[in-house]
Amino acid sequence: MPKTASLKLEEKELSLPVMIGTEGEKAVDIGKLRAETGYITYDDGFGNTGSCTSNITFIDGEVGILRFRGYPIEQLAEGSNFVETAYLVIHGELPTQEQRAKFSASLSSHSKLPEGLTALLKSFPKNAHPMSSLSAALNALTAFYPNASTNNHQQDLQHFEEAAAVAISQTRTIAAQSYRFRQGLPLNEPRPELGYCDNFLHLMFSQPGKDYVVPKEVSQALNLFLLLHADHEQNCSTSTVKMVASAGANVFASASAGVNALWGPLHGGANMAVLEMLKSIHAEGDDGTKFIAAAKSGKGERLMGFGHRVYKNYDPRAMIIKASFYKALASLGIKDDPLLNIAMKLEEVALSDDYFISRKLYPNVDFYSGLIMRAMRIPENMFTVMFAMGRMPGWIAQWQEVAKNPKLKIYRPRQVYTGPTKRDYVAIEKR
Image (cartoon, rainbow, N blue to C red; front, side):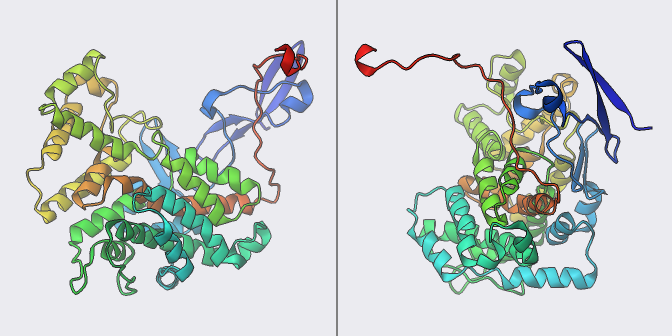
C-alpha cells in the first residue's frame, strides 16, 4: 500500500503521497496542496525542496557518496575519462567501443568554431571577462545551428546529438580562443588526432612552430578535474538550466544561462577564492599558522576550500583529485611555490586538528582544483570557465530530461508576499 503523510490545516486533514527514490530518498508530494487548501510551502533557498525527479546523479552528502547513473565516482575516476563519462551522463549507459569512437569523432568534427563566431569573440574588448565571452558565444550558437536550436523541444531533440557535441566541443574552443585573443596571440587550430584535454592545452599554449607538449600527468589531472565536475545534481546553475529549458528554450540558450549562474562567486568562484585566500595569507608574511589560529578563534576570515554545503563528510571528489594533483606538480617540476606551501600547511592542519575534524572542515574539490589550474598556468579569471567545461555534459543531460518530459510544466515557483497592502495612487503635486 502506498505510503502517505498527513497534514492538518484549519481543521482540514490532507493525505499527501510519499515518494521514495531508488536510493531510499523520501519526499512528500505537495503538488495539490495549493489547489485544495490555498496554502503553499515556504522554503527559503529551496534547501528542502525537490524540484524534479532525475535519473542522472545521486549524492549522499552525509557519507560522501557521488554516483553518475549509478556508477560510483571513484570507479569512473579510476577507469574512465571525461569524454566517456560525458557520454554516460548524457545517454545513461557506458558506451560500447563503437559508440565511444563515434562520440569522440563527433566532438572532433565540431571543434572548429564557425567564422562568424570567431569574429564575435574578436569583437569583445581584450579585458572582457572570459565568462561573459563564453555565455555570449554559447547563446550565439543558436544562430549558427538553427536546426538544433528551434526553441521547440520536439524538433530540438531530433538534432540533440549534434547539439550536444557542438556544446561540449566548442565550449573548449571558445575558452581557448578567448584566452588567445586577450593575450594578443595567433589562434591555434584544433587537432583531431589529440584527445579532448590535450587538444584544449594545445589550443591554449602551442606557439607558432612549437607545439605544446602535454605531460601525461597534467593531461590526466585535467581529465579528472573535468570528469569530477560533469554533474552535481540540482545545484544553482543546473537548476537555472532546467528552469530556462522548462520554457521551451533550446540547449544552447539554456547552457548559456547556466554559465551566467555559475559565474556568481557563491557558486563557481570557489576555486578562485582559494587562490585569493592563499595570496592574502602570503601577503601578510604568514605561512598559514596565524590564519588558522584566527579562523579557530572565530575572528579571522572565512576558510575557503574547506567543508561543503552538500557533503557533511569528506568530499569524495577531493580524495580523488588530490593524488592526481601531486603527480601533476611533480611532472611540472613545481617544488617550492609559496602559495602551494601555504596550501599544504592548511591541508595538514585540517586533516589532523580536532577543531577541523570535529566540524568536518575537510579540504574539498575546490581546494585542489584551484591549485591544479594554477600549476597548469590557467589564468585565475578562467577558473570558472574550466568549471563550465566540465559541467557542460551535466547541463546537457539535465536539459534533455526536461525536454523529454511529456508532462512538462513551465517552472513557476510561488512566493509569500510581504510588501505594502492596497493603497491609493497620489498625484505628484500632492506627494
